[in-house]
Image (cartoon, rainbow, N blue to C red; front, side):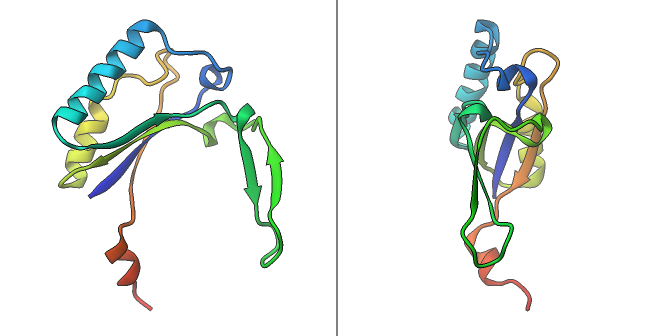
Length: 126
């Protein structure tokens, strides 16, 4: 089962501030544990939304509207993600619980979401 651990953005990450060396060390150790256990598929941090581009589709069938960042609603933004391949929802939760505070300033918040896989999309009820 694929799960994405989504690191939510914060005022600190949106300001483009890099994590402390202590947090980088803790996150490196966490990622090494994921790799050693054979569950990490990918992990990436994202630039602040000031480098972002948002496409919205306000009218069906028409071209999307392009908006340059920054985007003001920090709580709706993500700062990074880790994709893990685990045997169960419970295992995904266990791995997410082991992650250090990803912001390191008491602002950290993560979200855990299961990824749709091909068989689920082809066997959907009509």
